[in-house]
Image (cartoon, rainbow, N blue to C red; front, side, top):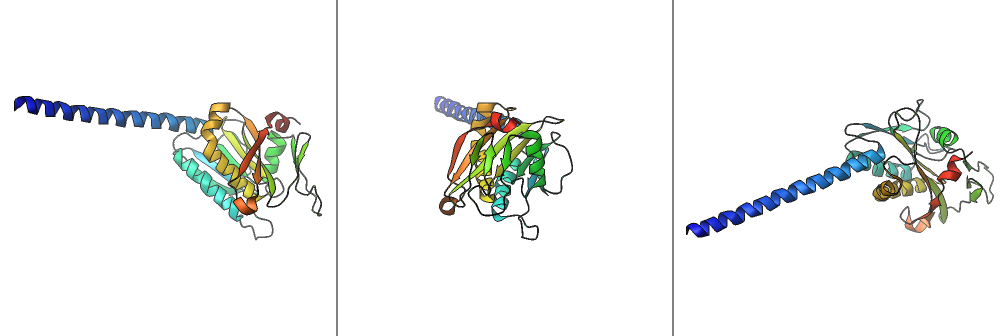
Length: 236
């Protein structure tokens, strides 16, 4: 009887020990993943992230539906880093960058903050501002390459992580031809941030050119990475 009791006690102890080791290992792995995510986004515990969004033209200052969806995805990502989000209009912020992480959505046509970032951080990027109908209306030029807009069919967006200014916190930019491309870029960032951190490092800069395919049928879900255009975008 004592031998049986001894065996049962040993088995229970082994199970409890394995459970404790598994719990500790899961916590350790989770902690490492969290710290890597926080370093990539520049968001330590209880830090603040500034979300800057465009106002929709002709809609009494409202934010477009797709930009709202993008903000929701980004807010969840910020919360997962144990940080806090502050949302502001692209016309409101009058401050530098680098002291806290910033994620800016929109084109320079409707977001003054984005226009300033392009001028300072991506001088090799320009948007066609022609209002008359034509094949180059809304075209995005990176370096010498022009990418035309076909509404609902072929739309482009730049997804960038750039570090500059005092403090060294990154600025993330989702600068596209239509608001649905901003949601596509935000979703791509949320889905692939681990792969991006592995490729560029936790403090690396990059500018990716994405193409949103057939958004009228697939929404922001079908995205192609056309390439890394960091050199072209950051060279005047």
